[in-house]
Amino acid sequence: MSKLLTVFGATRNQGGSVIRRVLDSPELSNTWKFRGITRDVSKPAAVALREKGVEMVTADMNGKESLTKPVKDSAAVFGVTNFWLSMSADTEIQLQPGKINGPLPSTLMAPITPIH
Image 1: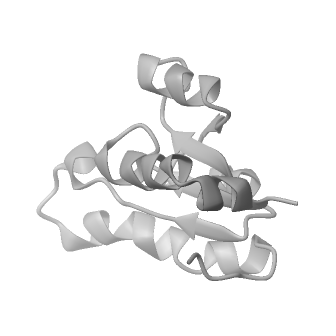
Image 2: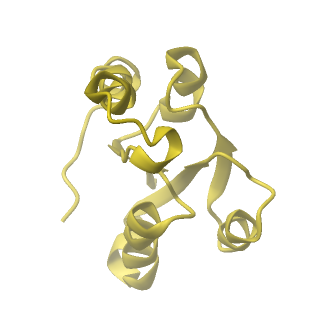
């Protein structure tokens, strides 16, 4: 049975590179299935990932409630925050998504297995 890897920023550079790396590896792609998190599941990059078998869902990185379902049952979560979304010099605003996301997955995820 494949383990679930949830990837925030799935349609962008960092999250997308994680998905591509695993999909390009026969061993890893047989071990992991994906849930990609993006702000807009209708954009072409999200549709392309869906066509490759990635479950695409939308979530608000600044809202704990909207993150509960996307990370549920994940064996691992790749998180990334987006400075450019707020473009704020206020470090509290920059750190907010990480503060919400950091403790959240451990309360919802399946037992964690390292990715090799």
